[in-house]
Structures are given as structure tokens and as C-alpha cells.
Length: 228
Picture 1 (cartoon, rainbow, N blue to C red):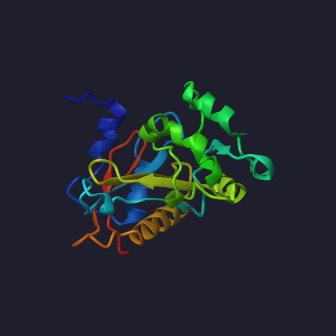
Picture 2: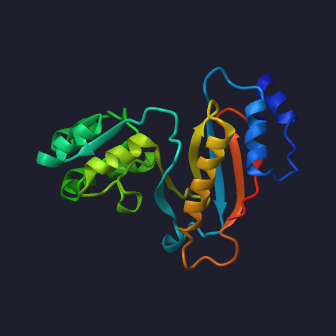
């Protein structure tokens, strides 16, 4: 049995578990629920109608949110020469090559996103067992393996969010902060869902989105409708 706080229990009592909410209504209600003592993230979980055991049905990518994420994103970049200089100018928190790979292999993980120039995969490749389980391994599909590392740094710093299906066929993503306005949260959420909808694998039959749940970091989830 899961022990819930009084705050969570009170919030859960304000939610209709049998109802599918419109997005704006759901956001408004979540903002009214008793909150935690910090600026919680708004998080969406989408259950996809895929078979996660089949590699051709897995979904992975990144989406730029128009109103950002409301938090500082720490970005590290694997690059050398002019590309390394450009990454630093774009705001990368740390830039390196073999030295950076050694630092991460040694246990340093104080970053959110890893971006790499394709020629640096010789260093990044050996970090798969370290970065993979945390969802931080660079990938061309998410725009984190790119020759234009400077532009990638700018995008992720501005609020580009990575996502990938988990073992249950779900996609998780943050779409803003509780302190955001309802309109800004709805715009971020709609942008994310519309983008995710374009990534339907050709092998998937039936509904691509089977359930969408929206919640704050420490609050109950609300099932929402999506008209995309």
C-alpha cells in the first residue's frame, strides 16, 4: 500500500477519475490543487498503441516548446576546434572530447542533455552503458547528433524537450511549470502532442494515442482529450 501525503490525498479528492478532461480545463484544475513547496513541472504521459517489443514501432525524438520549460537546461557538447568554440558561444555548459568522455565515465552526470558532432561518436560510443539508462545517449532522431552543435545547444537551452518510448510503450515529457499561465501550458502541451502525432510508425494499426495523462510533479494525473 502506498502512503500518500495529506496534500496529495486532498488533491486527489478534487479530481474525477472517471472523466476525460479538456486540456485547458485540466490545466486550470491542476493549478488549483494543493501544490508542493516548489514550482512543480507539468508532465504529460502518452500511452501509445505500439508494440514496444518491436524496434520498428519505437518512437524517439525531440520537440521545441514555444514557451520553454521554465528551468535551466545543462548541456554538454562533444566537439573540437571551431565547432567547440561555436558550442561555447551558444551557451554550452561544458565542451570537450576524450577528456569529457573520461569525466562522464568516471561518474560525473551533472547535465541534462548531451550533444555531439558526428565525428566525436568515437568518444561518445563507449558511454552507452552510462548514458543509455538515463535517456541521455545522443541520437540523430532527437537532434543531439548533429554537425551544427551550436544551433542544437541554442534549441535545447530554449526549451527543446527529448522523448522516447519506455518499456511499456509510454512517452513521458515535461511541458512547463506550474507558474506558467494556462495559455502557455496549453500551447506547449498542444505543440508537443501535435509533434508526437506526426511520428506514428507505419506498422502501427488502430489508435496511436490510447491514453493521455497530465499531472504536476507531485500531484494526481488527469486523463485528457486530444483532438489532433
